[in-house]
Image (cartoon, rainbow, N blue to C red; front, side):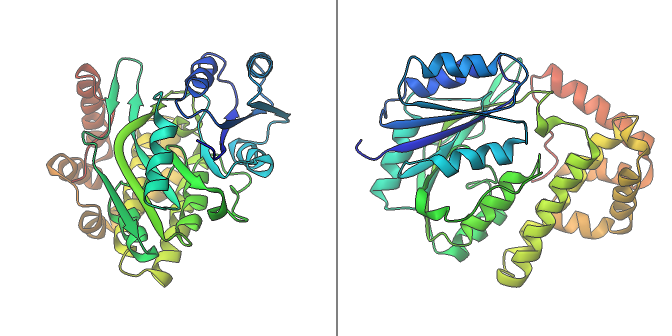
Length: 336
């Protein structure tokens, strides 16, 4: 454990969860850590919590800055990081006690540039593992990596749950101003210059899903920002990796459908020009959507309703959401 690993934690309005996050890092079985906590102008007690932990553990560095969003906060952490490796943890999430050690051992054993682990999704009423296997496999060469990124969920768009060699970042930084989709752009750019990735499917990262988080925000500009990020990735793939472009385009379409669903279920957003444009695009390109997103049985039904009658679609989605909530399920599963 001689290599130093920098753990970067952007913090904003998470005082109820921050202690659990930091505690889970302080007790890691891998101990040679540099823990960089970036207080992004949080108006609650996060700043004082950060300072309290820094006074107790010399591995902790705290940056206090004005609020500019998670992208700039992470960039501030990257810029001062002195570790040989980087990993990111959101301040409302936490890690298994051996998460960093597991990532590091796999990265060193396979001499990889990046290693990924599996996730637990944390809801108010349940914790669900997204992976039921402990398998480990290697992806080599940019084409194979991009193909896996496009067609499967092994790599994922998020930077959390990964350990990176510091060198793969180079001058890559998170785009300023993006609230959603910031992970996607920087992760894809890094993958374009990566030659070897280890995928460790065992879940080691607990991802908390909160209604108040940016990811779950209903702001139209946030959602459209996410779509724009995916469109940029598809455009790059079409020119450099045409074999992967169709799968990435399918993910873009699925993203548009998910955002359209949220808008339709929200009375205010359902009246916006963005919602009307997405709905019109779906109906005009219905066959193309079905062929590229590969909906399952339920997906075909709800997409047919969306094509023909918005009110029936909305009613079906509300029933589906209610049944899922009763069954302790939180995710929509409309694709194969």
